[in-house]
Length: 218
Image 1 (cartoon, rainbow, N blue to C red):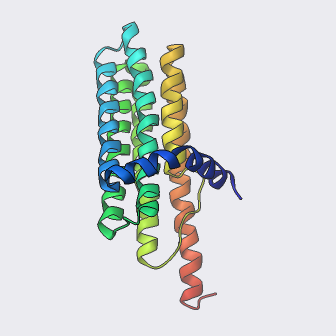
Image 2 (tube, rainbow, N blue to C red):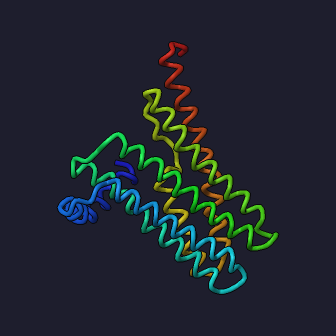
């Protein structure tokens, strides 16, 4: 069992009673997915406000709160799938809805962080560019997997999948808010930019091997 499976099992033990309560009162997975997306929109608003207030003490508090809200919203990302399975409410549209809002959630939150760097002064301009690279890598990791699954290839390889990206983004934002050191946020964006794009190409290489064998080239 790898670390992701172990952590997932631990989290499931914690959230299962809540999931059962949701089933009893009729909450659907699609509603939970939408709530998580709204949470990320709220986090983005905090980052935008922080960008507008850069240079003041309140800016760092806003960044920290943005990170905390991302972490909280990430729980809904786990609960919607668990609710669908436990409540026998899985649907093809639900999978599409979840995947689409996940992409929106990640892009809007990273966009907010990008604005923070762009408004922090010329010294941080390139970190805005790095954050954009993190946005590109995040999208491409998901796109390659979706395209691979369309070709009937299981493609979950890589170091920086969505759960890791959410945790890194939330953690560095919270720490940056507490320490009032923007370099914490910068380090997280560098990590995501590098590892997410590596993961995307890792998945491409994985698909190449599978398709080459399927086509009889190896």
